[in-house]
Amino acid sequence: MMQCSGSLALDLPQKMVIRESDQGTLVEWNHPEYLARRHDLSACDLPLDKVAEALEGIAREAAGSR
Image (tube, rainbow, N blue to C red; front, side, top):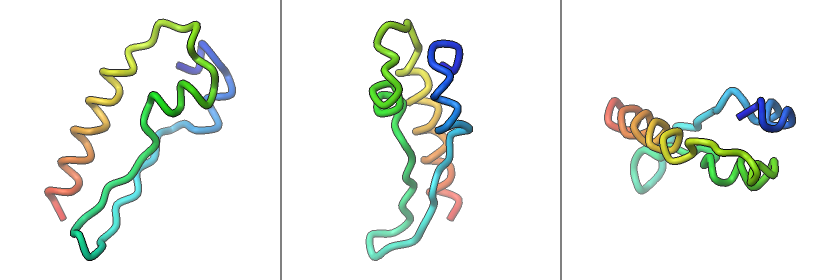
């Protein structure tokens, strides 16, 4: 992704916030589609769906281990 737009380095490495709330454990992060829009990566052929799947899997594991 950074090869497409160097400005993406501002948002990498990807971070997640894990916190407790009245609804239980919340895991929050910036979705890859948001980052693609933020850094105008529309001209790049990126596997954003695979990145999103990986992050969602990490989030599920993090929420489940709390």
